[in-house]
Image: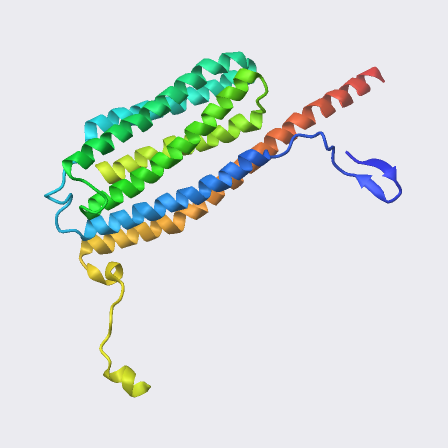
Length: 196
Length: 77
């Protein structure tokens, strides 16, 4: 749409028009791309160290809890599904998005707490940052993911509080979604690489 | 200088690159190199795809009211 205001000034676009991608979402996408590369670097280093070891996992180290973590993985994936449900509901009725968003946050918190409990058990069994290359990579990779999960959870709590107060911009929910989907999406890959 | 280079033994400083030369390590290097090469392209491609899809959605959304207005004005004539 072109509007003539002055002989030398032409408005060639309507300023009220929706942006192509909201700034918050674009910023989060760029952040997620950068973080994906960081996790890819960690996975690469772990894979090379693992393939170079004559015996893996190191024989004197405790085994990682596969079944318990599989359950925790399911909880995290369900949390991602619930966030998707919340976003769909938010488009129709903002109030109805609160319940699935709260359930998503609770499952996310369960995941983080379960991981913390798992860490404590492994430390007690002798797997520490310096006990072996398995311990170093386990705490580094899983710890980095836990940091991201905590940050994304804080963003979800912030989003939830804004919905409670009734003044959440849709771009804020979308940005929180992008971050949480990243946390949810990268975890099964890390589980497959580190645990299996 | 050339004499020093000729006399000196080769030194391998990187334990990761020169440590293991088994097939398994070579294979690991191969696939992680592939991963680290393809991932940025895939991620950037994903963002471009998302932006293009969004642009198409917005274009359709803005085109519909204009077409409706045109058809209404044509009908009134």
